[in-house]
Structures are given as C-alpha cells and as structure tokens.
Image (tube, rainbow, N blue to C red; front, side, top):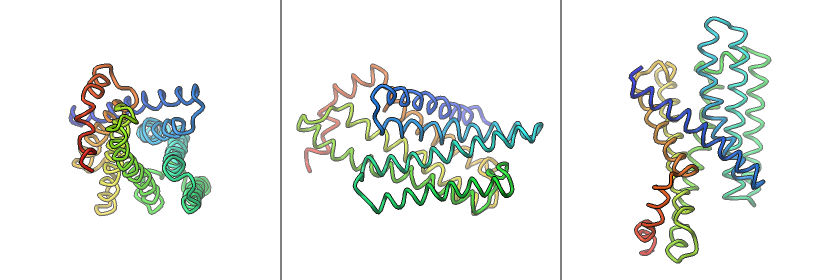
Length: 253
C-alpha cells in the first residue's frame, strides 16, 4: 500500500476515534441524545467496525476461532453505528415523522435479521464477502450517511440566514457544514466501494483505485469531523473573524 494511502486510512481511524470518544464524553456530561447518537455512529462505523473488520481479517489467517469472534464484534459495531446514524437523522431533523419511525424500526429489524443469519448460517467471517446480505448492509450505511449529509447541508443553509441576523453563532453554523461534508465524504466513499464490488465481483481492498478512493474520502471525512467537533483555536478564530464572509451566501436569499 502506498504511504499516502496508508496515511488516509490512519487519519480516518484515529480521527474518527478521537471524535467519537469526544462526543460520548460530551453526551455523558450533557445527557443529550444527538451527541450520544453521533458518537456511537462515528465509533461504530469507523474504528470499531471498519478497524475491527481489518483486524479480524488479519487475525483469522492464523487463528480462525479468534478471528470469527472479532468478525462478530466488528459486525455488531457496524450495525449499531449504522442504526445510530439512522436514528440521529430521524430524531434530530424529523422527530415527529411517524413514517420515518417505521423506516428506522424496519432498518433495525433488518440488521437484527442479519445478525441471526450469520449466527445460524455461514458465520460472521463471511461479513466481508461479496454477498447480497453484505451489499444490503453497505447500502444501509450509504443511505444513513448521505441522508445525514443532505439534512446537515440544508440545515446549514437555514443557519446561514440566522447567523447573518445575529441569531446563531458562526461556529455552530459552520459545524453543520462540516458535518455535511464529513458524512457525505464517508457515504460517497462507501458507495464507490459497494458499486465497484457489485460490478467487478472483487472486494474493495482488492481494487487499487477503490482503495485509493476510500483512503481519500476517509481523509476528508476525518478532517471535516475533526474541525467540526474538535476544532483547534486557530480555526475557531478564523470562523468567528470571518462571520460576514461565511454568511454572505445567505444575505442574497
């Protein structure tokens, strides 16, 4: 693997790990559901799910039994992360929608069904194989990420108008933009890998250009999430000092 590609994956792993832990600690103090759901979603899909899958694939080469256990943990982490993102999008943006409540509940039931399928059938070591079950799980992941990205970017436009009137802080407004970019990058990267796998019959890690794409999208997602939830002092100053420029697109609407 090219060093630059490896850097992209490492930035995604440690970036999502730091952001996820930060959000869980924040939710512990505030007792707020959004921080908890995003934190679980970031950790579940990122370091625990994807990272656990890679670790399981390596360990299973020498210890199949331990690898099977790690595959199970990786699946559970990914499933919980995916469902947390779906719940977040529903509860934060459309909390009164009964239709979405049914959709999210159905997705939870599908993921539980996947768990029992692997438990009673081929085993969790098959979760990385190109099967209809794996593709459907990937599509659920793409769906929650791209939906979340679209909702965040639309809410960012609303926040721009409020910020221009002094009714919202530039930092909070910018956070929606960054979350939209981060979730979108992660969703697009996953979608590319899923579509390439379906079309070629090869795993994402077997296709060099898909590996490069995943690394690049993971890097963008990690950096956007880091600036959104763990912004350095210089970035916070820049956002606040450039409030008028940031809000400029909204003033003409």
